[in-house]
Image (cartoon, rainbow, N blue to C red; front, side, top):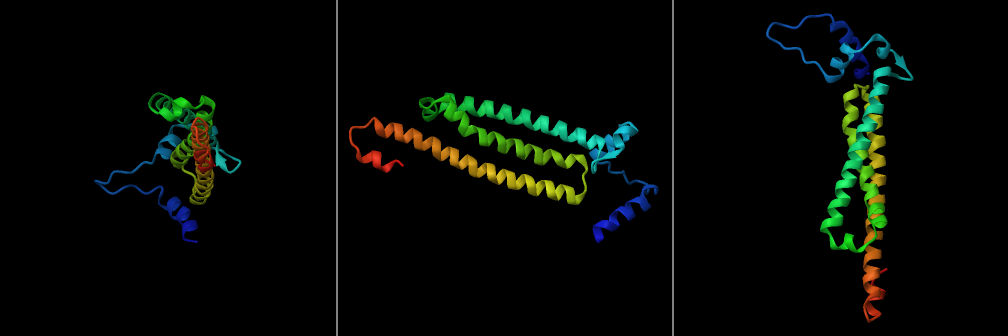
Length: 169
């Protein structure tokens, strides 16, 4: 109920001027809104048109950041890790893929706050992104275990005794 009252107070105080010596704080979204044409300020499907464009832009930026991080992580592991050098690039890419998705979700979660959504929308989106990131973390753990299992299994097959073959699942 209190959050619903904030819109009333904000509209009532919007025309009031600041006191002398007080600098008005402009949020990023207010600066964007003031420079946009009226057609982008109209609402369609729950959000303003500029927010829809912002979502597409954020998804694009998050995609770029995740791919760049994936490239640097795979390059670093390929050149510095003996384990990564001894396994196939496909297995390494399959292991890094969930980490890339986690980076995508994290970047999206941090950038989505600039779009000035309502409190309920931000809360819903953050919960959804946290749940998705948790699923990706479990997937990453599974892929890392699978990667090391294959590595140690191949190492165990090269030994003379069969005792260590039993220790590796």
